[in-house]
Image 1 (cartoon, each protein chain N blue to C red):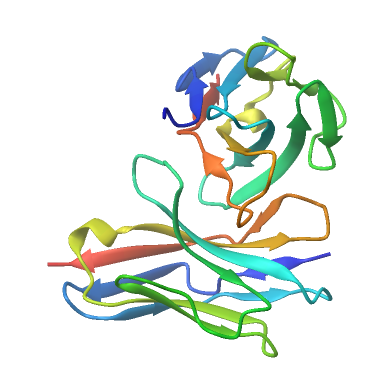
Image 2 (image 1 turned 180 degrees about the vertical axis):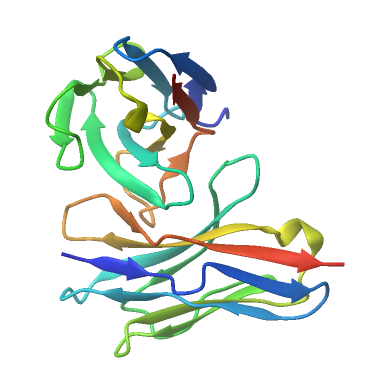
Length: 115
Length: 115
């Protein structure tokens, strides 16, 4: 069974600085998707970025980028120029394309942004 | 295009009562997923439904929990004889028939409190 591990329960970053959130996963599959979701205090789950496993190029969305290391099964999220609105819980999620159709989430990292 | 809607947003029940949580997927979406989030944890998959069919209920507790997605109307997650351990946030997500990028769109969640 697939597992997702986020080893950083909490991280802090100074406003305008860069922070990296870690995620590792375990799978025997070769084709899958990885996601980062943001959950602010409102609890609404918001998609931040998505990576297709068969694509070697790291995904980028404005200030958010990933470092996807398929062999190491690592999928970290880098947030550049951090803003106060980035403060939230961040969840890494694995999605199998083999037909299970469910996300497997990590336990989350709480990001604090310091003014 | 309205997003995924869930109601109620907050639900308080006494032990032994029934809880009914509703989810209206985005327009054009025929796939619905239910996830449960315990305090300070990530979301855990419960069940995946298509119209009138349960596709995967591997995350559902065997007793007291049931889900449906009728031909007309919202998807319902039903918890009978609630216990304190059922207190959690329950999220519904939906996706279109053709899974583009495998993104699931989340509702705002229902926070269930069992007294």
